[in-house]
Image (tube, rainbow, N blue to C red; front, side, top):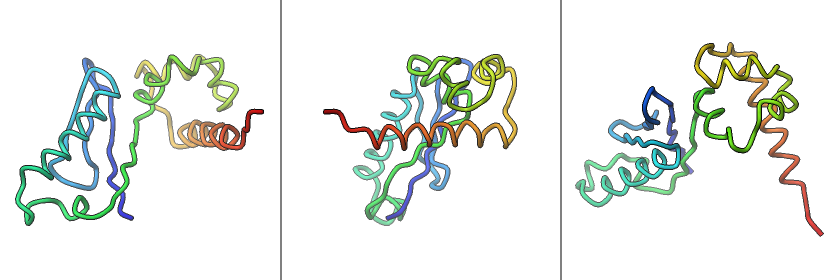
Length: 133
């Protein structure tokens, strides 16, 4: 199955989204949810309005959408779910540094990005293994 990679980034006044590996697929909104929906709407318009030869190849067959976030957007998107204290436990990165990342004051280097990603993936794996009785 092919993968449509969508990048979501936060700007000063909105979230923008675009396909990293297909030209012409763009969206945006005040929230991440709106940006995601805008991308889905753009894909549907392409499928409905373009001629068969103008539809990007990836959209003609089965594909999955994978969302790529910059750190600032990810931390802000999940701010209501993860406190900086919780993220510190998950990632090992101190709260002040996480606040700098979420506010855009600092950009994390690759090792810090890996810590954040690994921490979130570990949490996801633990949650997938949970069964409630």
